[in-house]
Length: 179
Image 1 (tube, rainbow, N blue to C red):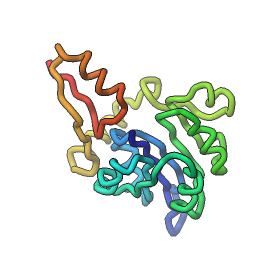
Image 2 (spheres, helix red, strand yellow):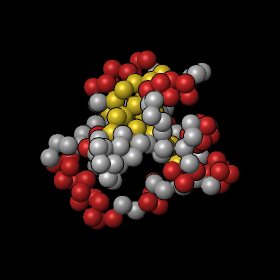
Image 3 (cartoon, one colour):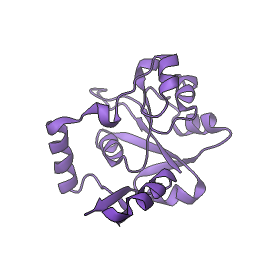
Image 4 (cartoon, rainbow, N blue to C red):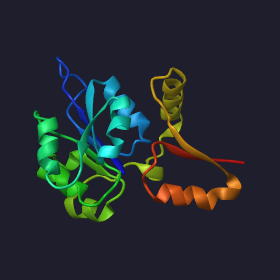
């Protein structure tokens, strides 16, 4: 399981930038690439077996488990002021413990924590990126500035197998169904 944290470091002018933690899946290439394009240092939470993959994508790996908050603080000594959670399992509380303001935390996985702590639940299907954002993404992909890694391709007749792989939450990329 790979989880990603991005820390956006303030630029010299501080204009349009901040520090953030983005705990997202590796398939979230847009967030990762956009964070890097805006001056981010990306820190990824992952098991040791996934550290090389993270490094190859410009991500500084940090092992999850006991002592995680201390490792994040060591990797982000200036602090964290935003956090995006796509996994759940206590990451909203971790963000709060790291000093992230509730209005700067976004989860698409832990709606109970969102309700309890008043954090955002932007993302997923309800986010509706719209034509403008999709056009920007297509341009970034076409220009090679965003990678969309493909973990596996399944024929539509094997949709059950595709979902089984997806449920394991250990892919390095997208699962694609083809007709």
